[in-house]
Image (cartoon, rainbow, N blue to C red; front, side):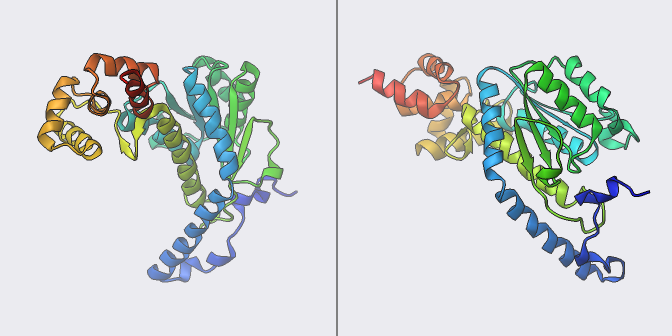
Length: 305
């Protein structure tokens, strides 16, 4: 009798690390580093599918939907991590991007054995969190076979949500039907089966790309600066002044005055400066253009001509 799981790409032995246990510290580090360099190349090969997934997320955000990550083990932890970083980075609602892991929050710190083996638990999660056709559910399973994740995706599809599946398995081994499949086959791990390594790195890269791009398209960034910021403490006040000063070219002191007039909202201060509009008018135009500073300024300038 042969093992089906033993045939998974993530379970194969890496010929480049066969003598790992007898290698020196420096040699081990170099082996790991050489293998890690493969990851970015494999991700680059999948940009078209990553773009399709990001477009689905952008569309979901436009209709007030959510991006929901579902995973188990390392995959689940990375989904929760990405989701938890969105509110403090982009001043977004914690509801906008959410991450769930098989076994619940306990599994973030301690392995919950067997939690990933029940597809019905993944299906149940979709109902518990009220998934709708407005949402995007992104399943993360580097092996491509995690029952909990597959169950969640199947239920999300039944509900009518957009579905994305990220895996490090070859795409021709994936049996589930989803709207977008992102397959990043990074190859066998340095330590056989340790998907926290190359597979985890690929996962982190792709999730960062999707969520960051979606936030940029929602007007959370101007040029390459995080402008959706309200200064609520000393550190943030200093950052807000520096951002306003950098973008407008005004002095640090002038930036401080603008922020006082804008109730400490960076976006409002920027629109005020660039369009010579009032704080109230600037807020109205930002709301009209979903928080996009550039679009609000362009329209205000037209209206003032």
